[in-house]
Amino acid sequence: MITTVEEIQRSTTAMRSGELARSQESRETVGDYSVPDARMRCRDVEVWYGDKRAIHGVSLDLGRNEVLSMIGPSGCGKSTFLRCLNRMNDTIDGCRVSGSIQLDGEEIYDRALDPVPLRARVGMVFQKPNPFPKSIYENVAYGPRIHGLTNNKTELDALVETSLRKAGLWDEVKDRLDAPGTGLSGGQQQRLCIARTIAVSPEVILMDEPCSALDPIATAIIEELIDELRANYSIAIVTHSMQQAARVSQRTAYFHLGDLIEVGETNQIFTNPQHRLTEDYITGRFG
Ligand SMILES: Nc1ncnc2c1ncn2[C@@H]1O[C@H](COP(=O)(O)OP(=O)(O)OP(=O)(O)O)[C@@H](O)[C@H]1O
Image 1 (spheres, rainbow, N blue to C red):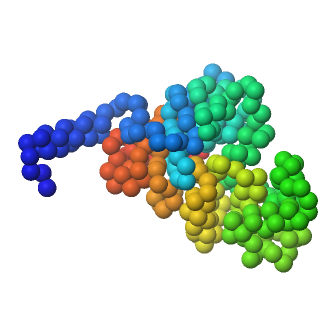
Image 2 (cartoon, rainbow, N blue to C red):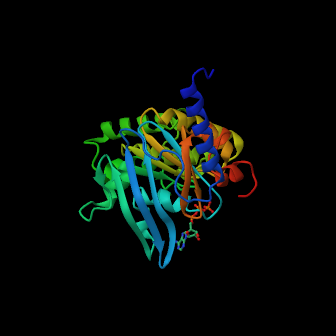
Image 3 (cartoon, rainbow, N blue to C red):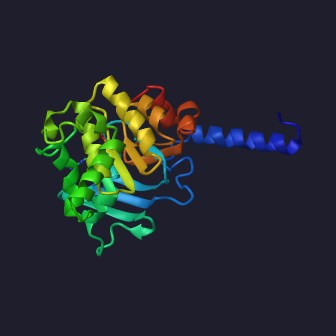
């Protein structure tokens, strides 16, 4: 309850600034894009495909043990931004990235930094499950083997088991580790891909619409898994489903035409968006 003059003034000022933010057409990010002790820190990130600018000076942090969802209309740049976080855009001809992106304080676009180990530290799970055409065991063992993470077969076996357990798949596959990964159901294949990512000890997991090819039951299992993985990893997820963003993430970032329009606690973004464009999107007025 408001009881003092100062409180009334504070509340009115807050209301006014809320209204201002809501009505403005500005493309300045509304909300605090920084978090204390960030795992990843992005500042003024621009991405160009040839002479077309796809991301316009975006600043955004990814916290430790959080799920950050990135939402917005098709073509707004969510996947492009996500791919910056482990330099996957390096593989696209004509794509240029500028600005600063740090992982634990280290510039990931530093010339001296090798993108191969970076992509183990910042793993990625794609829209369509893409297991290697190898056995379930080999799908998970491959990464640790090429990165030299284990010393012998016993250690590798243990790592494969732990990774499959963390991905919630062990009980379903433990008796058929030699069977092809591609023979699993879509949801199991996606969990196999998550196990493969986990096996190389990432700090961050990027997920680009990881459930869009899955049925509702497989989606629910992956969403539960994402929530469990948060205990050990930082997760950034691109999703077209606002329900999914609301279910799995603690913070949500809303993108529009290459700009980061608004970022905040997921609950606040969905119940009390401060920018008109965010409100239009979440209420279904466009998108
Ligand atoms: N390889 C590419 N070459 C040229 N332009 C690209 C490339 N990839 C994306 N773009 C362009 O960059 C912009 C952002 O695309 P991006 O795929 O990042 O958006 P998105 O929000 O993830 O879209 P969607 O939700 O449809 O997947 C779009 O205008 C798109 O056409």
